[in-house]
Length: 361
Image 1 (cartoon, rainbow, N blue to C red):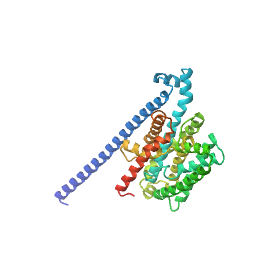
Image 2: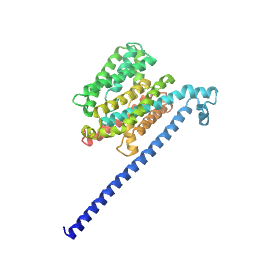
Image 3: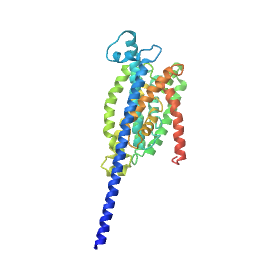
Image 4: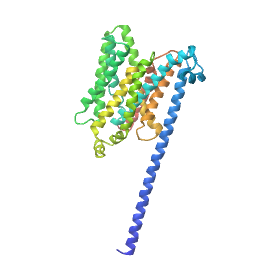
């Protein structure tokens, strides 16, 4: 090899190395920027959540000064202010926060795992399963309170298991699971409609309020099971989040990376279904919270990574704000699901229109 050839080869190797180094540096910079933005967004969402949470404790027909809230929460204070905060408003605010976290996390896992923005429990039948079980328990068996919540939980988990079993043949495919879920949800909606047609008017009204999604009268009895469940489900979801990123690349690539695809998918679906089931048992199927939490969080964080914590905080913020609006800004107290439905339905239409323009449907 001549000196000229050796020089050209050395130059080519040096040039290729510099290009690779520049590419790696660009990727590292993008990752650092994305991580920084995600942390900033998470902090901003958390602080906003604290602000709305505090407002929900102070605003109402009986106002409590914001300056007194920290002392009351730490065990100080007394009289009517303490009773209103600790017995009436705090359980409701905590319930709204935890329900939003559960819906936000569950919806994110469904959408990311199935790689479909429509794959939320509102669409794929899980919420309808909870509604059918609760309505049947209320109208047919006369259940109420904790028993009614348990029926809703069993209905959501059972429906999730049926959908998974029907969609599992030949390996679970996201599109197939969504279609199966839509079909199962339609059947369960028909069951609810049938039960409502011959139910007593008073029972039908109770069932309707429950199906809309409602936080009225929530106490620590309803909040405690959800808090315990989330204490287990959130760490489990965080532990499996890296595997979720691998599954989004497709089953073959995920298996090549060493993931146990079917087992991991089943565990993630179980966590998502349990999150939604516990939340629905507490507050009913509050519509569109699980549907919008992940897209909003993804846009805020500005990346394709799984924004699990931002989505959970977004879900909590959506429920808290919607409940605040439903209680204080509409002239009369309404169920929280009325507000989330009014906001979520136009978003669903916009998403379908955008997907249609892009040729995805």
